[in-house]
Length: 430
Image (cartoon, helix red, strand yellow):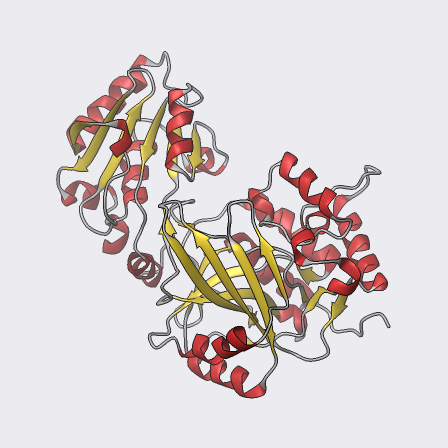
């Protein structure tokens, strides 16, 4: 079973560093250069300076991040907690579908284990580039700077019920409002009884990584590099119950290039779509299929040349079963897997390396962006997807296989900079 513990966190001291609003940031992998500059300008202590480091002097950026974090600790801007605690987070947000929701979770440290039944499972394939970047940063800073987002089953929501009273009766440690309107509120909870209740509720639970696969795999490599026992055997996680009413999963749409002028490829794509799918002309506003997945395979398709929109419905499940014969049954009912097997690696000729390095392929998380990128000619065609039910994600993970990259879009993201998890045990600066 996964080992979930309170952590003796490193965190900002608002009296020295200022409010979290000036210090926290989105995860590093969604920050573009302009946003990074805006975040860094908010405060000399903004987390982006260590989590997405740049050395103004042109030196090693990882060493620069480590030196900067050390300086913040020396200044007292970042301090080490006196005792272990759990940290509750409440995220009020408006989803891409326009619904106003609240998602509840908590931060803890989790023992790093190999993937497997009963402990920790991934759900998507990963790429080597981000893992090397995060490993070098971890080696330099000796800390988890950005949390992994994981899910656990708790039908009675007993873990959250143990933490919720503190969120209703005390002021939050800090708040962070994001550009998309998401409000993050954070509470530190050190009450032994509450902690014991959470650990009892989550005992025996299997954790499913929702976001942060690269960071988790980095943590495994780092723990084995150091060897032995110690703080390096744990990783910072934000845990949310699968049954939480605010847990939602949205799609990531697929966009393709290299079709213009390639008549052979266009002909092969057209044949595949006609052979495998019922093709229905629809209005562009209806490109995203209604409802959730896990049933009939349905996709939206927009041709950038003809500017026409189509609904693609798989003619028969046996087509997917044959194309994915070596994969378990839940995987063969996954929209992104069927699209990858029948189209992306079929007539479009993409291989695993192409997909990993975005050669001929792009992604968009909002329908509006995905449609605009095709309408503008930035991409030649788009495949528009619906969200995947959490239950299907569980089924596929339990079957021991990983989804194609970017199959899920858990929204909102968990911010960086609310807490850090030190990977060496030492006294903080006096």
